[in-house]
Image (spheres, rainbow, N blue to C red):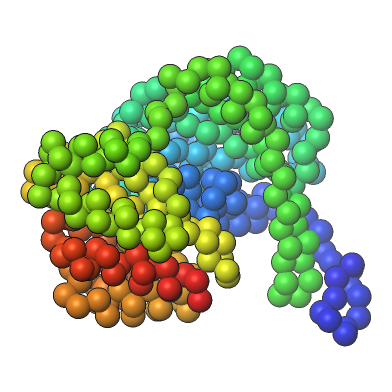
Length: 353
């Protein structure tokens, strides 16, 4: 039963009208399956009805580290749920595994109004594309079975698949119990299989790229972009002073992500340092405005405070014009030391409101 304070208790409507309704929820909110609000370490985008060559995968999710997640949705009311969902998802996964990055991009664009996933993630340097290519070649992606009710048959199948598959491929089932009353919805995700995936990774540490450290990132700067090395060090120190936590990235070249808690929306990683083989760009600072486009108070405060930094090279006006859907990444050497010291304070102030 559910009620607004002081009102009458009402019995909610349970479940979904159709599998499509579950699919639409996951597509609109990929964080429900990626495990964090923005994917593992950055923004996540989702594509519905991704054509694998043998049929449409319900939802495919891609994040800024190039991590791929394939999701198939089924309701318990479907008597063939365990046979259909396993057969379909493995068929789709095997076809996607045979794609290269260009074929993946084309299939995504066809299902998503012609928009390339790499354009949507501002992958001007080709970093995400390279990670996707590597992940496709090695079958390094996560397979998720999204259901409204986990049963023993599904649990058994998930445990078996994780036992017999390589560490690069993880399989889990997520139950999305749903209740609604009027305009209010309650969603309770419960996952099964995470322990098996983690155990596989622990048993085969080579299957997962280690996270980069600060020392490795600064060493890369000194060797490849010496003019940015001191600025990167200043920014890292300023982020620590502003209360950010370091979460080393897993990109192919050195990367660092910096997380901070927000009282209203939880932990986010709004600032990142990347590296690129493009000598004109070198070390990059990224501010993830797109992570807050659905949180008007925070996104506007973030834009106002960043724009207020004198001479800041981040194109905040362009970010506003594009509806906060971008994540501008700017060469570290384009910033002054004062700007690099001020940026973490501005971002932290916006998120802590």
